[in-house]
Amino acid sequence: MRSRLLYSLLILLSLGLLLVVIAGCGSATETTTTAPEGTTTTAPVSTTSGPSGSETTVATTATQPFKVAVFVYNSTPYARVAWEAAKAEAEKLGGTATMFNPENDAKLQATQMQDAITSGEYQGFVIQPNDGVRLQPLVKEAGDKGIKVAVLDASLASPQDQLTLYNLPGVLVTIGFGLTENCKAFADEVIAAVDAKVGKGNQAVVAIQPGLTNFPQDVIRTKSLQDAMAATGYIKTVVMPQGEYSTPGGQKSALDFFQTQQKVDVIVTYADQMAMGVVTALGQLDLVPGKDVYIVAGGAAKEAVEGIQAGTWFGSIGNYPARESQLAVDTIVDSLAGKSTPETIEIWKQPGCPPAIDKAYLDANPDFKPDWSVLASG
Picture 1: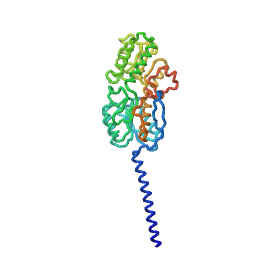
Picture 2: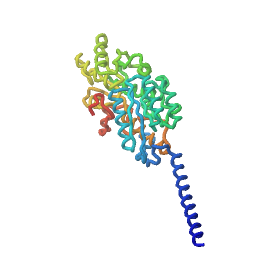
Picture 3: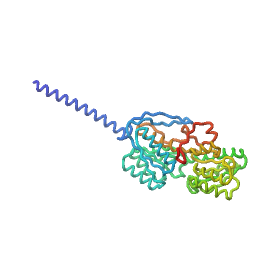
């Protein structure tokens, strides 16, 4: 009788243990279905408000490791800053980042992305697209596999379709600004420079220095600037030789241009590095930048701030590669944690990321810190 009682107790104990194991297994299954292995499952968030009342949710902590693939344009300082910011943000949130650099080869970038998808190693992609159209099917494939994709600078499309920010299938978030906004920022800053140089309503000549004459984005910018200046009724435009998005190219363009052009009030160049070449060329021509000729550039880099403070530049349109990368990683982590995320983030609505910087802005915002450096010296 005693042995039978002992036997019954053992059976009951076994059943109890089995129920505990089953309950434990059920709990583990629920966790893995709500968050893929290797991703964050919870992440406390903070909210930052932009100047227009916009809000961007930013992840502050990740509880499990995650891996992000960062696809950059090339080895330029702009791309390098974007990579370093993404890497630092991923590590801060408990993850890791791997860089893929195609050196402007759009076909190679597509191959790198396909390999990253096939590997199954990454929970997020951060992309500076060399050719948005080429990457569209790959981004859709990545999204279908649960990879969170953040696109930087502009919409993942041809330049003609980058007038506004929007998402295509597979894209979690697009961070940057549309070409329409970019063109308006350039036009507003150039008109401000003209009015400061000659007085509002007085006849003036603006020289436009494209980076590459046939580059679709530059074609759109140049046509938009020509139309905006013509609409004032007092500003004439001329187009300079291309500056090739380099300091030597900007210098050569200006030297060649002034062989035939006698009178220019403002030069607008699409990149800070070209503006640096323009400053050198003006000195060689015995023209004083900031006095004889005002300069409006693009980038809001460290060198632009220094030029504005020195009085040799009038202004520069804002680019913020580091901030874009940080927001991309934050948004990916939030999404992996099941948080609600924005479809687009307009970078110029983020604190400390104005559409343009000039003396008036820097005087009113003495704590402004440039996001990057053309010379990559800090």
